[in-house]
Length: 403
Ligand SMILES: [Zn+2]
Image 1 (cartoon, rainbow, N blue to C red):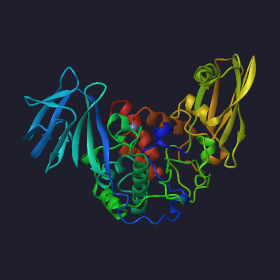
Image 2 (cartoon, rainbow, N blue to C red):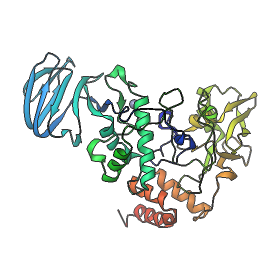
Image 3 (cartoon, helix red, strand yellow):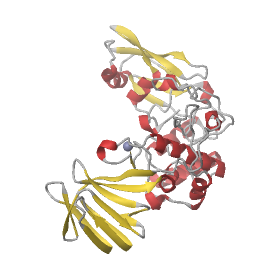
Image 4 (cartoon, rainbow, N blue to C red):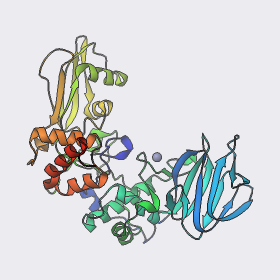
């Protein structure tokens, strides 16, 4: 199971296979109960930039001083960090910006209004927008608009629930959510798509709630490896509706199979800050797995002792983009400390494969090296049969034949 909060996945923008819990009937929320205003930090620590609107925009500062402009307006922060210069007018932060037409910061147009709030360095541009319009600028980062409408709708519900559950997460900084992976990637109007807007509208106000009426925790993943994990095995705490379940259907994504080789020394270095005290590390193995075969505990043996560590902690320490999940086996060919331990998906995760293991590895390394655009990766996810074709394309690109 992956969730962007914990940096569990660089892969997160792929998304969503629904867990069964999503179909728990939502509590008796009136329609539109979940439509709220949200403050999104879209550009942090800015010292200067350009505001633009094709219509009239009005800037109102902390003291009520206003400035009205149309077109472009350059903004820069003054040395004290409390005032900005807009055109040639000095305004005190925070500054509210409203307009009839879309407001743009740099090349990014936004619905709703903007607010400039003081930041550690300069100011932060905050987009004040209702949740439905916010979602229009979010979904494309997680799903491919060409996917089935039901998937898109499900993602809209999950993203809406996440946003509402996390309102105020950046309260101290003057906004609710940031527009980065830390919260939920949001790109405003530039990320909108008509099918995604349709999915947002079709699910307007719908959220997932618990029996108690709280917003549910709704993590999602690019690839579960065939079975999701119990939340308690991944993060702390136990959430009764986040239990491991088998996937209801078979699929294959670029993340279904992976392999990584690490030296014992590398593992040792990564785990020291996590409390590894076994002397020189000599062996790593999976101690305990859950019913789906996912590693729950990893045993670490050294020349001065041994210890066990939660596999999820082990994974995060080594890097979630390297150890892509806790569904792995470890093979340790030889003794010397510079030798590598290989991590491969455990049997449960290995599915019918179109590529040979060698090509599979090559493709994964191309993916990790950024050889593909997110659209291409989504296409690969949707059409696994195209992977050999993409692999050829990546080789061509690398050799400079094709850009
Ligand atoms: Zn954030």
